[in-house]
Image (cartoon, rainbow, N blue to C red):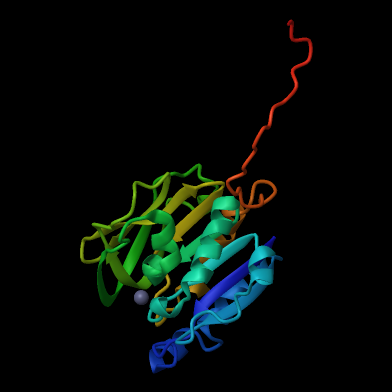
Length: 245
Ligand code: ZN
């Protein structure tokens, strides 16, 4: 499986807390999740200048696109968003992480504001599995504890998920639909809330296993078909055999 990770570089990652959480860089940590599982993984950096290296050739060879962003959503060019969204509709998998709930591609594919309530207090998040038979949750038990995470709470302005796998609970008492699957066209999207850039969430073994299983789950189930453009068929008819005059 070919995985492409779009990961933003922002000033919070350069802070003391950010460097402590990810001495190797959060982008490299995320890439290591999928590389350790044997998947060919390309890492594309996003920032103030958008996502310059997500070109057509890379996108068209991608089976699963992973998107992490926070500060620079607005810098992502609309044509890149549209091409990536169309490829999801044609069958590519998409994993949207944490603050990428506000990314253009997620809002484009879901059609709602994707807004939520939040608080950055480094609280424990307990992610309860509400669908123990779901492939994304395989072997991960009844819940996953994230010792420190940014609180994301309901109401989360998304369409009703096609599959709800995890509900997060925070020490403030809030709950959140933190692990959801959406089917769009021939593609599958998995949203996962943990992963604030100053907490070492993507080092947690259960989270790493979950992300790999999510990639395997949203991966294309067959060929990624070409776009279906409005085909004009003037005068077209299929001759009928054995039709009685
Ligand atoms: Zn965050």
